[in-house]
Length: 80
Image (tube, rainbow, N blue to C red; front, side, top):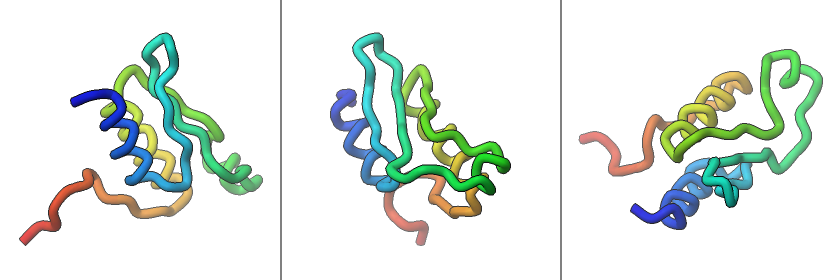
């Protein structure tokens, strides 16, 4: 799958984040809104990076858990 498609999928899954891939090949995400003091205390980050799209998704899921947000494990069809 092309990195453009990965970018689009992750951006669709996490609309509160801006997703991009650097010229060096790292995958990044930055929140659209500043963190509250409580979010910072909970270990939330304004910007995160990973080696690959799956790693970025893992970090984004972890960030969602820290803010109490529930996010599906993977985008795709609903289970039967």
